[in-house]
Length: 129
Image (cartoon, rainbow, N blue to C red; front, side, top):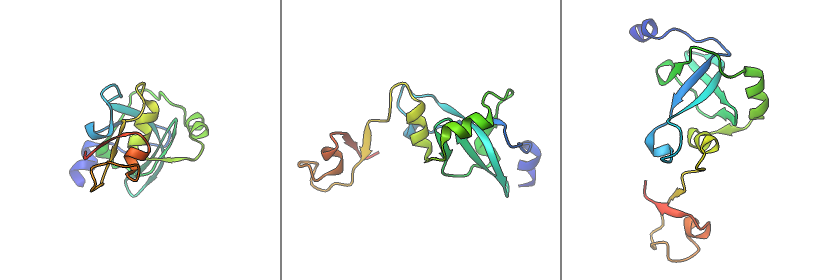
């Protein structure tokens, strides 16, 4: 922890940060990173807000990268976010040009033969990803 605190400087509230999106949570056309603003800092955990809402989970300093310029204004982002809670996957799909991932995790044991399966009922491709 001591080395980590020396390597990464503490971020202030209102700083624009970049959050890396894992490959599993994005489509090929989606951005690899999303921009967010630091809204709260507690016990070295950062609460972030995007233009589409607040991210549900708190992030450590190692998981986010500070932008050199403040690209997002904290007041506008909170107003646009409207208090909604989003996962990182939902925030990525909202900012993507291609839309959401298009797959839904399926735990169906019948092979998705009927509309009882959640993915078949919603007419979405299912995947074990």
